[in-house]
Image: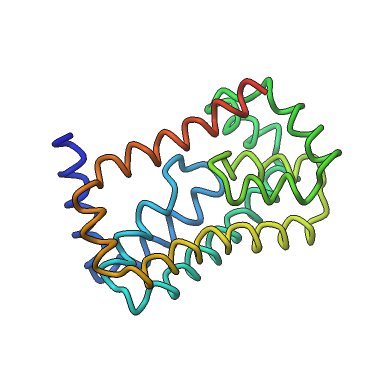
Length: 194
């Protein structure tokens, strides 16, 4: 677990740097299209390092995640065969692509909301929502509500627990990172085997 302690140290260092918000913006935006690491892994140490700014940081995550989602939607709408399928293929989810269409046909905004708040990859949701021509307004509203709930819940816990949360995470960051990565992996596995 020494590797996680080193990584935790790097996250705390990054959280305290001047350009950390720009990195958070970039990660939140790209995670919605292709990047595999969730922005939560930056939001948490940044929020703990700057507790008074945690809701601002959650707002940054929300805005840039939804902007990335809309970009993913547009890629799916106009460039699914050229770009979107390459991203979905990279994650090994080509066979599940049609199953996602059934979800959209059956659940519409709820499918977007589940992907927005859960470990199910939001990038697959955004790309396929455009490809299957889900109503853009429905996509944006569901994304804002679900992603907002996720990021503001984290921010609220950080603001409410503050130093206790930081001490808890410092002692258990390795377990937290493993759990987060396992949830992301389970999200991919869930989509892959549905």
